[in-house]
Length: 315
Image 1 (cartoon, one colour):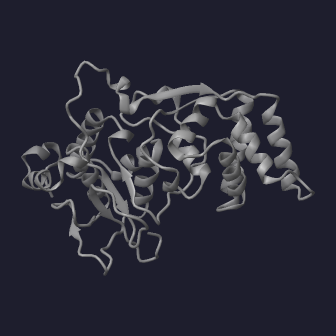
Image 2 (tube, helix red, strand yellow):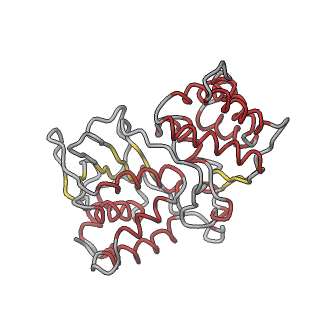
Image 3 (cartoon, helix red, strand yellow):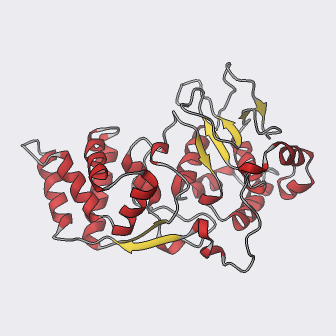
């Protein structure tokens, strides 16, 4: 294992630096006088929910009748009410980055009510009722570094967008703590890069945490708990990867053991600490981290490729 407090002096760091193509890296030459919170690629927009025409009460009535099993509201009607309650600029971000105009957003919100974990969905819809009623202020990334297809459903995607306003200047802004987050789509390649975090302060935080952890001074659980509160894909993806902590290389792949030495071959971590060390290396090198299970769909994006494989098939 290399010294995470001095990666630039590591032979492995230099091997990756040599093997990871410049075309996939964040351009480092940004003016130093630009404040971190004003970087073009990491801005947030903020706005409160607006209860136009008592939307919260309408959603609540729909839910109450639907759960009571009489005729109830159609799922599409609940979807329309939730979509109407979202801040206008948030709907614009969803339109521009997820390709969902208002009608398609309504359609997915209605369709996904009956998909996945029913209790999770009920809790998510109830969250909208309460927070629309209260006019809660929320933030979201101006240019999200993740996609709708990175999540199992649109409720997980919206939950990843929703960001706690008081946290938007942190190295990784925090999600809305009481919104029940949805699972990531483990059938895809999942990519995290500099659009999801402030690189310099996050590296400093992780160097401290991992440098102590590798010496046995800090339980990785404390870092795991912090990650669960991160917004965006980065928090949900790393949380799910770290949940188990038992990893193996699938028979179909010729894996490297962590840390990675080649951007083109899959890395299988030996433990949870090595997952975070691999992420830190990617951040240090300004290279995306790509995470996948055994048989992901689509083309693999460029970046350090971390393969997660569990015997139970959960990845």
